[in-house]
Image (tube, rainbow over all chains, first blue to last red; front, top):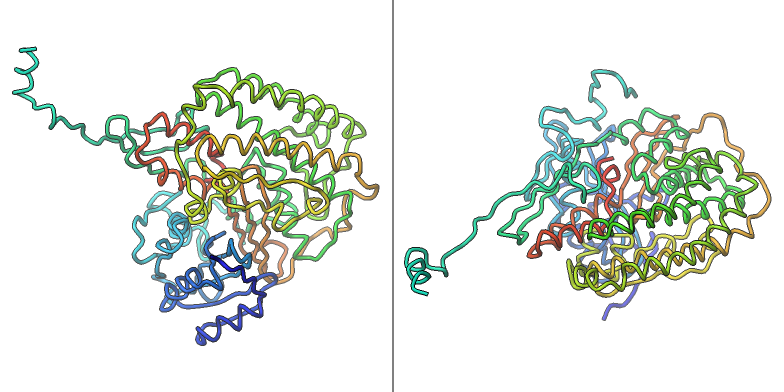
Length: 157
Length: 379
């Protein structure tokens, strides 16, 4: 028996900040954003999926972003039973060797999205079963990083 | 008889075993419908593992978008999933409009929804004819393309393009609809309502077809959610994922339609899902076509669009599933980062999970009913 419990962004914040006081919470334009580091990422992700009141079972989108401060991986989550959405952000500590734990044991779809992030931003994922480049060859740099130098200057920003 | 036993002494039959071997399916293979390479591990004819190798037509759309303005980005998106060009344009347009909190005229909403559904029909027609061909029915190809021509003619008259429409822009649509638009759409619906039962007669009840698809390549609901399989493919497994229903946009709140859900999750259900969806699309267009309100075809927009700082996410239902547009803005005239969550990308990687243990001919049936478009995967 599953009891559907839709939570608003405020309710989600209250619910999660009790459990994870060290995480940072921010209200985005649509979704609640929860920001964690690698040390708690896997634990938080498991909690988000397994807790009955939350049940975030559908990973809509996984994207890597090179924010000015941190290389960050953004997880857009939805609960198919409770119908609420939220955003989980995991920031990496070291820009030279960015490392995060994989979440593909929690959401299998993450396996290939993580390969894409590894390919385009160079974020390594611990315990990933098959971390290879996806689109580009091994000799390429990481084009979605902001310090990437494009030799032919097609794309400049 | 004696000869056989002699042979059996040399090679005992119970130890004869075929080795596993690798076969390259693609990048040039008719049933991959584009440059997709599948590394298939086989034992005899039995599939043990399928590893997709992608990136042959990776065009760096996300990277290019970072250097373009918000009015230019939609033009790149119809090169992703070229069979859902209008929905891709609309997704970016909606994302920018929501970020700016611009309310578009009602007329625009109606036009966009009608065009989306026409596009969905055209896409499903092409899927129907191509996947029928994959399963050995060449006639479907001629039937499907013949009927798709009518829709492409309507597109051409409306916006000058048949495939890459570039019709939706932030604020509205590029031009007003052609004076003939409503009449032609109504003519098409009348005609296609007669043709659609023909499609079923030709394929859906066919014994060879049902034998090859019923019970083949079953994707459970749990797996569909776990692998993020959306669109008709996900709904065939019972995963209720229709964005048009759950987070309605444009004119979808004004229309009545049913979200069809399957239970089996096999190739046959995936097939039936798309056939049903065509009927629903026809009914959506019929509800809107006579009621297009008068008014402007675009909202007043500034020449240079600058989004406020922040992150914006827009979900749209394309013909293949859920398209997510994730724009991060730092307040400048071009975005800081754009990410397209394309439906094909997530759908593709579920194939390995469900193809194991089936024959290589079944793999073709599975691919056909997944309806993959390769530029959508590679972006």
